[in-house]
Length: 108
Length: 246
Image (cartoon, rainbow over all chains, first blue to last red; front, side, top):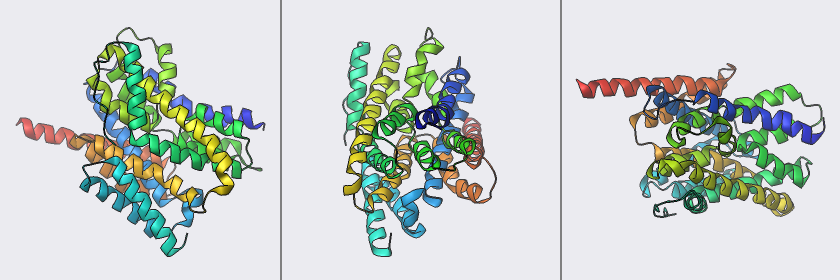
């Protein structure tokens, strides 16, 4: 398949269709409706699912880093976030530092 | 990184510019740069052209799905399976759009007018929009989101090219570190935004059950994670509210 055609059919449409469906399903909903609260919970849980999935079943190069290092980097980054003024940036930097240090120490 | 002060955002243009400023001072400016350098290098590894790689960032704008596309389109790939994998990995885009629209849309906003704004929606833009848009006048919230989205998407596209050309010069660990920035930034930024028990419970339950569902071999495990953990969290929220009322 031509790579640009594949980009449209296999890359763009399967992602974009969720955004379009969101317009349709989000139509006419009130900000304070119960269903919107439920959807917000589902969105948050799905994001958590993406987090867990990438760490536990990593794609590509991340698979070369041992599972224990990935878990410690995620947990350590989260603790740094909690301790350092709930700064997402601090959590990201700490998590990355732990991942790189762990990968260097225990083999990437 | 500190937050820019909320301006009056008296006009749509001011709200749009405020959105750009919020985006560029957000943790996600750093995250997107790092992520897309990694993505550009990956696209180079897999033999795609730089134009294709940049266009995939513009059109898909969903990091994990882009990685699946690039690694799944190789010779002998089963195209339908790759398309399904891309769709399943992007399911989160549906609830984030549904949760955001009631906050930013006006009564007179037509569906077609939302096609471009929702295209910008990704977890990064959503997190910043949910955090800042409620403080702005409703009339300009979509302009604000467009500013955040356009700034981050542009950054992602430019740094896709940077990563593409830097590929040979990047240290061996760079690819792994770039892939790890998605989970750690999603986790900390979502936790930062989680003020209600509803959101905290959804985050904790999602983290707890996602690995079990992923390893169980059940299909659509991400989708199930969202529905099960999200519904449990909503149930807890209802219980607590009832407890508080009685």
